[in-house]
Length: 471
Image (cartoon, rainbow, N blue to C red; front, side):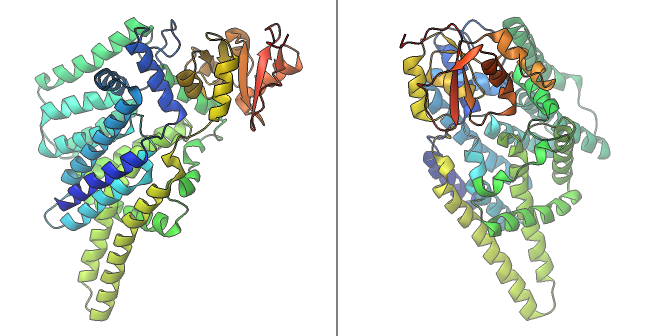
């Protein structure tokens, strides 16, 4: 199908453009895998066997690919690009019918052109999105072996995949399909159980700590009052849509129209139920607005948009007035041409195509030069500090530090600092809410600001009693 070929070309180009893009959570994966390949174990801080990686399947895939190519970031780029291409292919196959080929091809090109997916590179997002499509494809074909394996891998990629399984089960019951044979459950059960057992034996924790941490983060309401945190997506307008109103409203409008059409086919109903279940879960748990959580919405939305455009085209073809019919169809195709072209242009010029700097590189160099290796440092941006330094990194949000998320969920901003007792703490200026404990400790004299560290928007505190190199 021509749309797939064009999409693959777009993915190749934009993957190269975004090859230098990393963000903090990606570097948590990368440090863990690097430690594993160096023989220190699949851990973030050496010697601390905490399960801080949400996606076991992606982690093992990244570790395996890294051992082959010899470089963790390169492996992350290869995996993300490959599964984005596979996702384009499988969604095109799932949503295409004999009369909407042109419109689903357009969806595939929009999917590939979207800035969003490239800003998730290094995370499990493209693998997760691909597996969603594979589950839908296996449901269509009633291939229970493939469906079972796909569902197991989906759960091991992101736990929210359980909501897709629930949606497929509901549609399965609605269609009165025969129940799968017991043999179809053996391989999926072995995959999931073996992974949970391995996690328990290796880390003492079957469920990823980062998954629990996100729930506590939601309970803290630091990302937004309940139940609004997940819906604070205004930053997408400039970051993903390039502040282009035409692009936003054209893509969103077509997707909404297509969602209504989705009610009349099994894949559409499953997709809508899945997104509905996810939305309710994220809202009830007040899950923070981390951008990679929205992968399924962008993926399914892109192909719903093709269905919406096809619906408008069929409606226009039925108009009796030649002039009105012509104007509507010409307008439709003009809009369709504009969406992928403008999105591709946004992706090409996106500032996100370079390293997503939460802590400036010069600040990282200063820390690496002036803080002794092996020292403990507390910070919210743990990925950068972990990847670029040899420091033991702790965090108030509990992403890479055991139990700190519980304190955060109770809005206890002091205990983590007293318990972890880091020699240094990096905070924002002005400080974030979760860094209030550091500011209190500074007021009490337990920490003093290091006046050698002078970088805009950041402050470094040194524990009282830790020697100043100038003394």
